[in-house]
Length: 288
Image 1 (cartoon, rainbow, N blue to C red):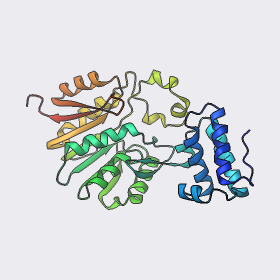
Image 2 (cartoon, one colour; image 1 turned 60 degrees about the vertical axis):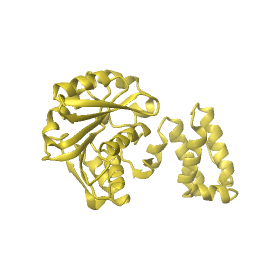
Image 3 (cartoon, rainbow, N blue to C red; image 1 turned 90 degrees about the vertical axis):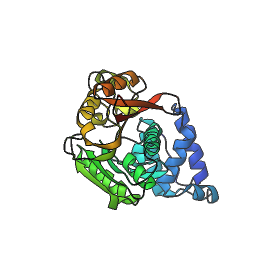
Image 4 (tube, rainbow, N blue to C red; image 1 turned 45 degrees about the vertical axis):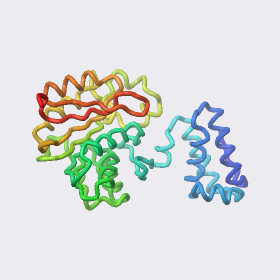
């Protein structure tokens, strides 16, 4: 069992936490330890650097010990602290939302390139924490967006994140099954839908399989169920020159190109930093 001594200095507690996590095979031990120390003690990185000799105290030691036990058991740091950063912005999490991942920033980048000027009307399908919509609204101060999700818990979290990041007056969050309840037109429709094949989920890492909501992971037998629904619903909602952007799995480019063509949509694929196909940008008019 990992136990932090209340008399330990902040720096010593971080070093001990790093060693303990590394001993349990956690590759990001140093980063995880720093984040957990700061969260448990309610301090910043600057506090840790400038006042590292101060003792952690009884309450801090108890909370950090509990955090480390959860991390060793496989719970992701983001779930432990209940928040994570995306697009340089802070986002609260809940059990009903995914942890925002760096790969999804590729979707934000693609959306920004798709409409570089003027206000946009945006729909974010399966909004979850609201990270995609909130990120876009912070970049486009004259735009408005609607985030839809089937989960009341996710919608509550997204509303709080919009307020936290100063865009609540330009964002609405409503319950909906993809785009079924929407009326257009929209300049941009974005989505990071569940795209993992049902049979694959059991083989995912425990951090994902055991802690992310299955509703946000399971894409059906072939991982494409959500895309089929979205592509059936969205094209009539797009404004002239509008775009539909969806995140995809690394092996789904060909399937999404085929689905786009079946709905008379032109498709362009954007790659993430690892070079994997990550986002499909679709526009109306396959023949144009």
